[in-house]
Length: 512
Image (tube, rainbow, N blue to C red; front, side, top):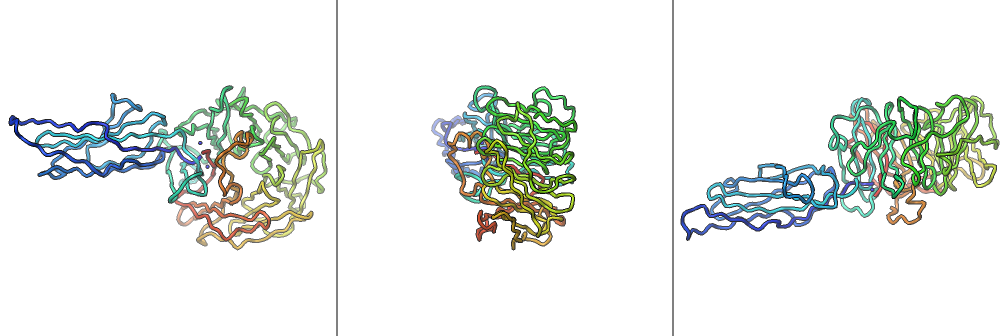
């Protein structure tokens, strides 16, 4: 969650013929051969992971203390000149942070007999893959949002073709960039776009209260910063609160409360979305709902005038938000939108609290010239204490949490029915801070639109991600729980919990 990790494959092989020097003056002197074992013939490792070599060096009449050792590595792939020294110890442990390349790096290990000067060298070829790989990218903080770090999680429920135990790639920012990441992460997304040729501008977008940052998924280094992500922007600050996909080729960002769009097969930078109202800072995570499949549609609620607006995905760079004139069936004056998403049938949805304190789910379908709208009033549960909500785009279903319990809201037959689920975090000290539907990163991108994506996971759109935080221990976690699209209940299957984070502020799936 291109998404789960940069793959690195190490194939161990002899790169050099054994080299022996007879430094004695006796031509008939026989020197036993040096043997090096324990360097595997084939290893697979991911970018950011730690690799360890513990070779065994033997020679008749010698111990391992009788040798000098040298590990070296290419500075650039497939270049024997300009090598760097890694270690002079027998055992090597290093974290893979090499720039991805389709050409191999070479790691060599040399053992030299201190007495005779006899030496032997073996080597490994290191192939570093072309992306971080598929999985969930987790942004978290350990100092109340002053700084953040990024970890990548890969396993069978998040990563196509993955087997084995869960793999954490920790501290990606500090591994590949100088200094610390300043600020709390508000939202993240990976998008794919073009420079006018091919889809070669994939980037991970990260939003904070001060910046919008595009990160190269090949190296996790900064690619574009702030204004470099936009066409002709006049913004001087870049408080970024939300990212999303709207249709097969369209994505959006909310910066300084304004809506910006990008059509990825046309451009690689954002343009402002036209909005006729004078007050511009009206958009945020609470009042945008979107359908992100096929052509896609975006719906927003403007609390300033109590009106709903929409925009088709294909118009997001050159169109304007239009008022939805259809009646949602309740008084919207003074109403507040508190959550957004999409439901079954590619329909944007918003959760709105009216001025009288009642809660309404508002859904719009844009298959006709005049949008068809549906309204459900929710009268039970604990919405007054809601901390997070999530719509499911493959069902008429919404989940929300008050921090301790999780509720499922089913919409059917013109009414909404709320169920309190029995699920609880592992510890009573954990508070639920977020909940969202798991979707592979390619959902809503040109990969879906082209209808030829070859790596769909069985868990795609069929499990919820539940984020928790334990104030006592300072640990953030997330849980993966499959759900039933018909009943809203979690299934008997448990896809695990994942921890070791600080307080989680955002999670984004990455491409395969």
